[in-house]
Length: 328
Ligand code: UDP
Ligand code: MG
Image (tube, rainbow, N blue to C red; front, side, top):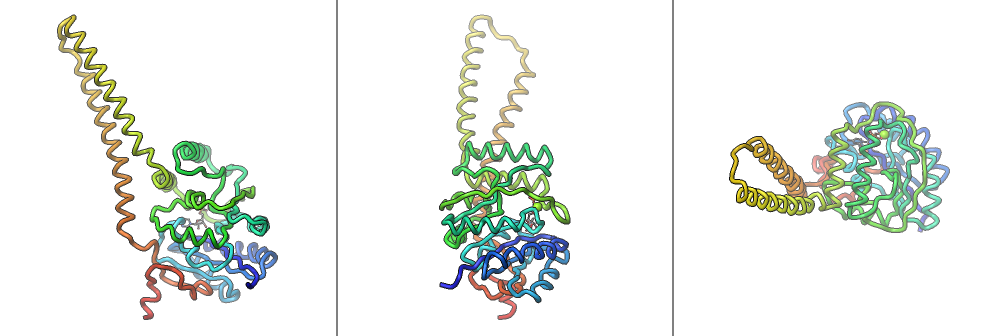
């Protein structure tokens, strides 16, 4: 077998200014640690000059390629596309904004050679994020640890190395609501963490609004837990029990002291309270039904509009390819 090849997957969405500085720092690292490597950018519907920048660098360095989506599909799906197109024996996933220091990849590869099939970067601190964001992140991880199907390693994100075996398993998971962090943990394999310090974002701003993050957190929860569904059964039991107790109380009181009419405010309040609870539980059920609907539609995960460089030759993706269809 030829010496192992390393693939680096980088999802990019409007990162034009970051492409050149990133390559400047990443390529020397790759040259040092691997005799054969490739970089697969996944252009997630950028509206700026991201793709132009990649094309420019790709002309000088054919080991740099790109898959360009027809629109923005989201980072999770960009990662899935990267896994479809990477050909390495080990695949590294990293962000384009230099928050993931490329030098750490060297340690990833060392661990991989020691026999770990999954090596994840572990952020040592979350400074640089607002307090509120950090608080919500902590709450999410706590809830996930308590109710999720699988434990997530502390502080692990998308910055990681995955062996070919793991990549092939991940590629068979066809779910549309992709919570990669959960999927990485779900596939198992021998894993280890490498601590790293998150650097400042180089150019541009984060692509994650608070709303998007919240959505993402719920996606993650819904994909790996049915507790949000089951909890309503318990709440239903408790409420019914309370109702019976209250009924008994009123029955006894009426028998002993007769009826009295006042009590409208409490009536209205309890009606509103319990309809609120019912709507909430219906809403949660609706969220799951919506996800089932999204899955059964069986749409492809992404649509490729264009390919550049090495990634262009790969045909191992299972989805229709707009750029090919045009040519045919
Ligand atoms: N990204 C993407 N599609 C999106 C949003 C983000 O491909 O819809 C990419 C982005 O270009 C970057 C990485 O995902 O390379 C991480 O995004 P960002 O830095 O905005 O997230 P943060 O570091 O704040 O979590
Ligand atoms: Mg970032």
